[in-house]
Image (cartoon, rainbow, N blue to C red; front, top):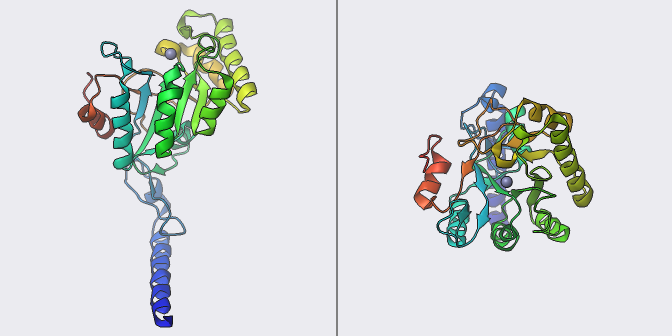
Length: 274
Ligand SMILES: [Zn+2]
């Protein structure tokens, strides 16, 4: 018995030692080079591996349900299949703060990073998406237009979603296209939504989604002035190093995205637009 313990102990010590040498052998340059799939071992060789990926897919969902002719909607079956795929293929959903630090501070992310986002706050985000995401322990983001669709989800439901790992972010107050508003109106949309979310969810809201994907130069200025660090658009593509954190691309998710195309969108930067 003692001998067995000794062998196991020696084995663990050896692995720890290899980890330490591996870490010391790396130069800082190696650890932060963009695009390099550099796996950095943490103090324990069993810690979760991280790397600096060449890009991050940000998935954009709207409603989930049975509306086959509406491509802004995705069927429950297809959504469940996609989340299962992410889980089985080892993807790691990350937060918008993680994405910000990847862009602004060149911070590494867990292997196979992805961001899962929902726009507009439909009831099915609460009823269908949340339980599936919870099952896999996936974090996600809901962009919620406080004034326009406030009736769809209650604050109690939004707090429950937040507690389950879904970030509740701003989608303006009234969901009006920002490029058609005056500077003062834009400021109001941004400030009212932030204030309401901050107060009701006890948070510092710093993530924004442009209603209808539209914005002007003033919108970026106003977001910055109000403490927003990340904003997403509806422009297709991956988020890449060097991108402006307030104009991030997202990948469309709807009924037309079957599993084959889902996989392509996650693995190929130049995926086919359907
Ligand atoms: Zn919207």
